[in-house]
Length: 269
Ligand SMILES: [Zn+2]
Ligand SMILES: [Zn+2]
Image 1 (cartoon, rainbow, N blue to C red):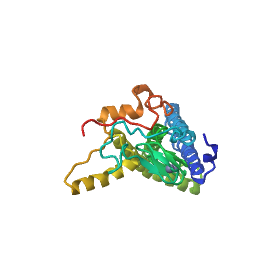
Image 2 (cartoon, rainbow, N blue to C red; image 1 turned 120 degrees about the vertical axis):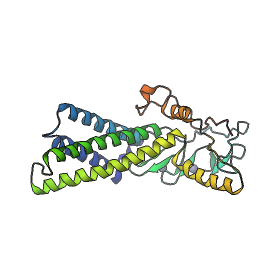
Image 3 (cartoon, protein in one colour; image 1 turned 30 degrees about the horizontal axis):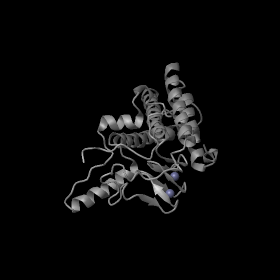
Image 4 (cartoon, protein in one colour; image 1 turned 90 degrees about the vertical axis):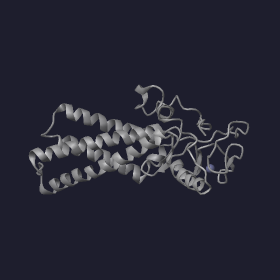
């Protein structure tokens, strides 16, 4: 756990946005509209979003174990980074060590990250093997909270007009916040859809772009390419979110994950 990750302008900005949106939703949009139940539902979504954000911040994405050696006797990974597989191990020149499959070097973290998805500047941390589930839950609950807030705003405006209690400056801030929230909801919903797609295909963001290139290269040489870790939607979802549906939305429930240095490979190739 690195508490230094909290000392970042972008992390502070996210805390401020969550705080400001929560204030506007609870004490302006819902003040004379909606009851205690609406406030409780939004309060839960906002607090859970905050919880997932903190988990993403403090949870390590996954470092290569010091005892790691490539399993040269193990199964090959067809199509995994063309020309590179476990028989021809991948090496990180910066860390001067072997990289397990799906591992990538992050220049910002200055280390190799297991099953790296991307480096998130808003979280000031890499999203990888161990904290991806927390990240997915963060995106999910941020989308739900943002959409809930937007619906409350639209309903309030529809029923009582554009004028909110307070000065004209405050009114301008509230209306602008509501309109920005509508845009934020669309962005977050698109981002959530993207990560649902990645989970359904057992892809990371990096692997998606590698796959585009690999497919193009394969097509040029008259071959076909398929993602080697795609086990089918059902098994892909279980392998990432876990076998217990009740724990899919608990960000720290990652006991089902392997050590992040080896992954089940599709047998369809
Ligand atoms: Zn490295
Ligand atoms: Zn990083």
